[in-house]
Image (cartoon, rainbow, N blue to C red; front, side):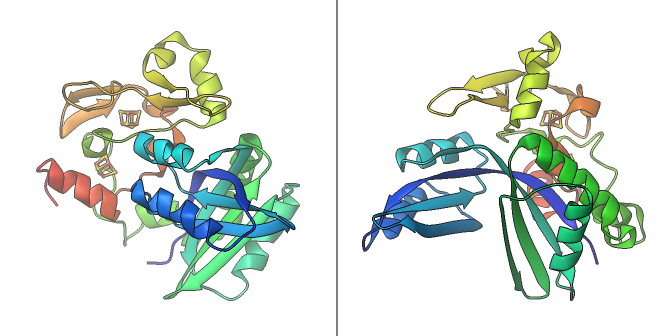
Length: 260
Ligand code: SF4
Ligand code: SF4
């Protein structure tokens, strides 16, 4: 299946000392907290001090572990993660689309393995990341896009199920972006569906709220397999990014006894 998959990720970072073992200590602390990181960038900035950036961090437990390791949300910086077939010129194609959209980049990292390429691009703000995502979804070849795959003959399993399934709406820490948090705070109904995570993050992080007894998102309506998201058109980006047919999707359906 040829496809692009574009998701928005939070980046956390912090300073590290410039001495032997400093990076190992930080990563050991993150590992002890259960984080399974995909992106780790560390570098010396000046003599005696370096910086560390890690991603993704999605759950409350992961945020706690990152804070205990001395990391904090990296300002308003946001990254897009683009997973795509490893084709010649992919980097040029991605950066040309972004250049033509007038978007400046904070950082760019890419790695290819096993025929796939994962690119991580950092932007100055949520708004830039959103514009970049829109530009890439329009600018990268439609026949290769995730949307085309979902609608085509090689559609992933369970495509089209999401408006009744609801399995992944249980036990998932749905973290809102800063832009989404502002939009939800302006709407009392949406705001009531969220909960605030304070700690050291500035601005504070906002999550979708879950029922304490069932662990399901408060926005989910109906019974499992016959339910719908009560805020479907305004659901967070993290929910939109949760791909039908992905390993996580299949694990959620399996866990809740839904057909595979
Ligand atoms: S578990 Fe899969 S099919 Fe069900 S709602 Fe989530 S993504 Fe859609
Ligand atoms: S906001 Fe909607 S799609 Fe997202 S977890 Fe809640 S019910 Fe599911």
